[in-house]
Length: 267
Image 1 (cartoon, one colour):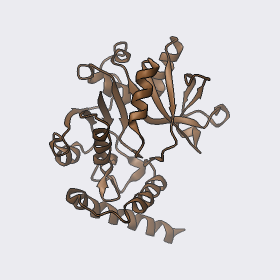
Image 2 (cartoon, rainbow, N blue to C red):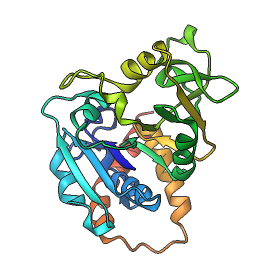
Image 3 (cartoon, rainbow, N blue to C red):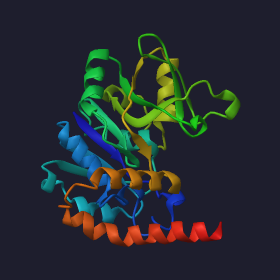
Image 4 (cartoon, one colour):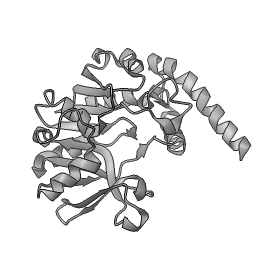
């Protein structure tokens, strides 16, 4: 199985932390989140990884290289214009000749990807989506499942009066290559807005895989702070061995601390 890590966004809600790096390169603890994602994929046997790039791309390339340090192989896809999650996958259609994981680069979790992979292989659907419970369904793609864990409804970022569930797309899902065949090339397309509704409308199945693992979208300052607290708790008694993480972390950590301090003083 291969993987696509989506890392092209600018992370505007996290400025000034993202002034000099893309959002997935922010450290959670002492290690950039993107590196942690690569390690999680490797732990579950996924060693062929593609990463799409747009904003500050060289900070990612310089840190990860071709992935040899982690015994993985990384292929980069540079987007001059943002193509969206599905558009990024479509551009790499030649690369995805087997089932592949789509992993949003701002998702902090240590979930068991093996369970998701097993559910996909057993379910036989073109897409299997990890799901988690959220407090803010208007900011997510929410789903309704039937008794066989198949998605009955999917709505991306519904209006408050359209909320029917708190079960949401976790930003990690498995896709079969044939899903890409009907998509237009080099056009901005999103899995949530475009592909999933289209699959359901055509009668195809999407399997939902609810998880109870901790999962945080670090896309806001509040969530990034929450992830930092969690990482600090988990690493309190662990040795810090990753020198590259220590090189990357201090500057952005100091900016983060100053941001939180200034905000508290203003309030």
